[in-house]
Length: 517
Image (cartoon, rainbow, N blue to C red; front, side, top):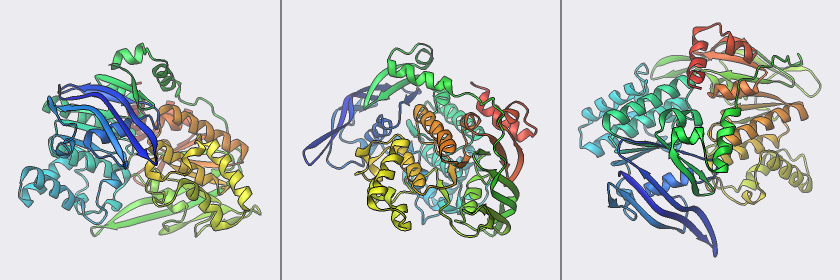
């Protein structure tokens, strides 16, 4: 047995208040085995991973039970495993990479420390592993800083670093969250292939039940800090025993393509004309956006799909005027119904980015974060702001007791819902969502999707939904645009694109998502 958790519990004590994060966890991972860990947001999945690696962010925490690795009791010496016997890929790569060091420096340092290699040898190993995660065409990737990479590129770099130390156990916590369907399959195929070749064990923590079903030998279901069911994956998906497990599996089957072909009201609220944006990286010019022409209509959900690095997030940032286009014009409809040039940030456009932790002030309580937009604009009195606050958190499925916490005390899914609530506090007419469900379990995903559709109808809200999860996009949007190397190559209703894609690239994206369903 490679890893064995025996009756492991994790509690914290703050001002005589006891909080239980893990409750009597029993879990075995054999050598060469792939084990999946699923459950709703806040069920304890990431907390379990942190416990294994002795990276708990919780003060005054107490662990009980036993943790064995290779039949050796490592309960109180788990830190020795990190970066050697055990590697981990977190769902937020930006928190794992040093923002002031190049990828080359960070990668080389880890390899040299692990294997006592020279700088040149370490660099060679780094390049080999970047090739293994499909970054071989990005010749200058080692010379870039983390902020110069897309979310998908950063995640692939982290996977390469984690695998380069040749661990016996790889813990992947939503490791493919930021990747498009093609890359997600390629990376999971790679991890699975290395697991077989090198006899590496993997613990895959994911809200993506399709990935768990495809790649894991066994799967554990977590709820409220407990493992409620643990069995072979095929058996779990065919005949789950626990009622909670049954509800998860049913939710997985509920997400289907949207076959409707309804047309939105054809009133343009935002128009993008001949938009260009380029970056210079390592002396080379990269065209992030090329000749983008796109209209967004009132009361519609417009979806944007494309692989990592295709320009999706750049388009969102340009729309928000966080960055400025090199060429072209963006027009928005003002309160009087007139189309005006959009050249600076506007509170009528609000956003939720995929990096929920990076977008929340770590020193502010959730209540302060949510109140901040209203304090800035000063539009309401305290009583009205409080009423609006309570309504927003209720709409996104958050409990009021979370308001007194700080961002690091919330799960990834909870933080994402806070970000959505904050965006709603501004009463925008266009809500731009960049991977809004990436950190959510499948049931919470459905809740958010239902929420988006109800908001669109109730508040005359238009939504721009950017996502790698094609199934979610097909379920939700009225119209879909496919982005490839900074250009829109296809634009149609989702049913038409799903069943009759015109471009080979579009076919490959859809095939990667649906072929294994």
